[in-house]
Length: 412
Image (cartoon, rainbow, N blue to C red):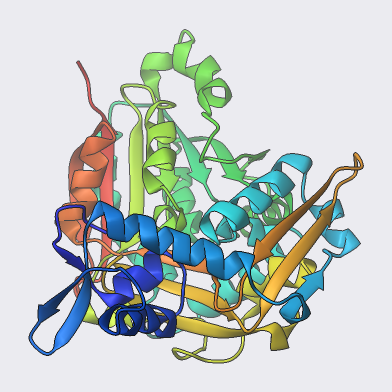
C-alpha cells in the first residue's frame, strides 16, 4: 500500500494483512459503532480506514488478537508426509517454512521438483499443440522472428554458448539451437534449473531432437541466489574469449512468478560478461492477460491443478480444508492463485535433526501458490534498466501481449 495515500480501500487491507473482506468490513462497522478506535474517512457513501500510524498499529493488534484467541477446537493439525523431507533439502525445507510463516506463500519453483517436473512437461507439451497464443508458443515465435537480428549481433563470433536459465523441458529453445547448429556456431548448451527432475526431462528431449549433435550440460541451480560466473568463466577468460559469446536465456516469463523478480535479474546481471547477450520473454499487462490463467480453471474454481498442488499435498493439507481463489489483484497488479483456509491450521514439522517447528495459520488466512506480476512494455524495460541492463532491442507479438528483449550489461 502506498504510504502517501490518505486512506486504505477494504481490498488493500484484506490483501496486505491477509484477512478476509468480511473481517475488514467488521472493522469498519465496529469503528462506525464506536466499538473500535479506528478513524475513518468518507468518500461518497462509503467509509474507509484512514492511513495513520495509529490505525496501522491498531490493525496489526487486531490481526494478532484474531490469531491468539482462536478456539482450540477449530484448529486443524497436520504433519507433512515423509516424502516432503525426502524430496526437499534442509535449506529448501527452511525456505518453505519461512515463506509460509512470513509471507503466507509457497515458493512456486519448488513445485517443479519430484513428480512436479513430469506435470509441467505434460502441460508444456499441451501448450505447444494449442492454436491460441500462449507463453510458450509466443516465446518460440518471438525467438524465430528475431533470428536475423541475433545473427547480426553474433556475426563477429565463431562460438556461441547458450545458457538456458529455468530450462523446463527445453521446448522454447529448440528452434534457436537448431538455428545455431545450422550456422556451425553452437558451442556449449548449459541448462540450469532448480529441479534435477526437470533437467533430466530436458536432457532426454535434447537427445531425442538432436541425436548427439548438442551436448547437454545440466546444473541444479537457484537463480534467486546463485551466480553462474564459475560455469562460464573458463571460456570467457581463455585465449579464444574474443571469439566466444554467451547468450543467456530467461524465457517463459519466469521472473514474473518470483516474489522479488529483481533479485534474479541482479544475479543474472552480475554473472554476465560485457559481450554476453541476455534474452528474456514475458507476458505483458492487458485486458486479455489479466483474465488468463491457462490452467483449465475459472476464477474461484474449487480445485487445484497438479502444477500447483504438489507441495500442498506433501504438507498433508486436505482438499476440504480450503477453498481456491483465482483472480487479478488491481492494487498489487498481479494474477494469483491462492487458497483460503476454512479453519485455523497448524503445520507441525519434524526435521531430520530432531528439531520441531509449527507454522500457525488462522481461519480465513490465504496461502499464495502462484503469482504473475503484470507490467506494461515500458515498465518491463525500466525494470531491466534499474537492474543494470542496457536494452539493445525489444519486440512484441502482433496482439501486444508478449514481449522479447535483448540486452547487455551496462558498461562503464
